[in-house]
Length: 188
Image 1 (cartoon, rainbow, N blue to C red):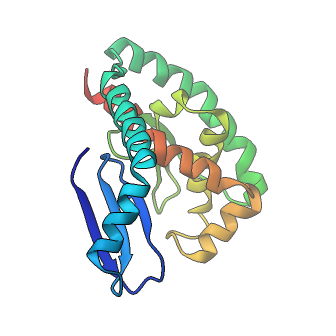
Image 2: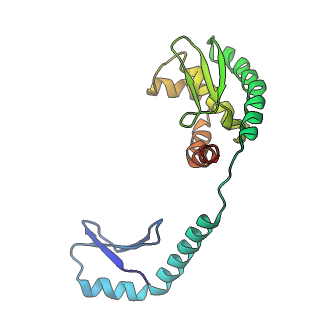
Image 3: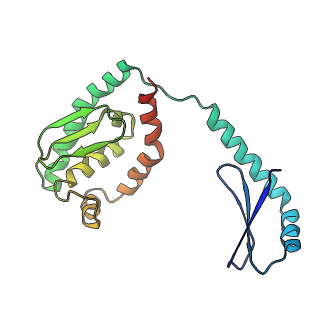
C-alpha cells in the first residue's frame, strides 16, 4: 500500500480520504496520539486497500481510453450543422429573453463556447454540435442574456435562470466534458 499521509487539524473525529490520484490521507484531531491513529489505520486496512484499488483501476481505465480526434472534414461538417441549427435556437430564445442581436458567426474556437460583442454580434463554437441539445440551448441563452447584462453578475445569472431554471446542470456538463471536446479538435 502507498504511503499514508496524516493531516492533523482541529477536527473532532478521524477520517480517511482517497484522493483522485489514489493517495491515502488520514485526517486526525490534534489531540490523538500517533499510536491511536495507527490502530485506526490497521482497523480500516481492508477498506483502504479496496478503495485504493478501485481508484487505481479508474485511473488505469482513464489512461487507456483513446482520445477522440476530429479531422478537418469532421470540423467542417460540425460547422455546417451548427450554421443551420444554432441560428434557429437564437431566433427562438431572443424574443423570450426580450433582446435583439446582430450577426451570428460559427467558429471552431479552442477556448470559448460562445461570445457576445457589445454590438450584439454572437459567436458560437461548432463543437457545440457534439453536446446535448440542452447544452446548446444553455450557451445560446447565456450569450443572449449578455444583451441585457455584459457581465456574469448575480443579475445576469438571474436572467439566464428565468429562461432555463436548470441551467446549472448544463453548465456543469460543459465544465465536466467540454475539455475533451476541445482536445479532440486540437489533436488534429
